[in-house]
Amino acid sequence: MTKAEKTAAIAELQDIFSNTKAFYITDYSTLNVEQINSFRRICFEKDVQVKVLKNTLVRKALERIDETAYTGVYDALKGPTAVMFSETANLPARIIKDFRKEHPKPVLKAAYVDSDVYFGDEQIEALSKLKSKEELIGDIVTLLQSPIKNVLGSLQSGGQTIAGLIKTLSEREEG
Image (tube, rainbow, N blue to C red; front, side, top):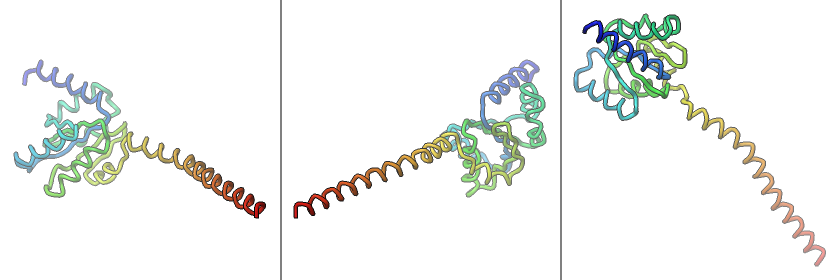
């Protein structure tokens, strides 16, 4: 790779890292070609981009964005590395977790999610349980609707009770 190619690759990575909410650094070694292709297919179907990258290029791209923001990630840049980019923070963790039900890897080296660094494979469970923005909005809407439904339910049942009382009272007066 020439110096011009490296510079262009770093600029491209810098752009990708800057415009992605979450990225996962994984070790994919020991997976055969069929397994890697299967993993990439799953990621593609779920709109998660996977790139096999050189550690030095990743580090240089991250340093150009912000030298201090990604310091926790630099220790993970050793050995074979594939980086997963996603707009949904928990999606790569869920993909890895599901894929590892049948395969030993990929193993999580580190994850960067909304300025937080998760280091090590033991973080997969916690990352897979993170709620996406859409899930959080859904939870908030549900919580906001709950009191309204209770009030409406009370008003509706109260209306039936009042109507029943009036009907009973009018029948007594007639009888």
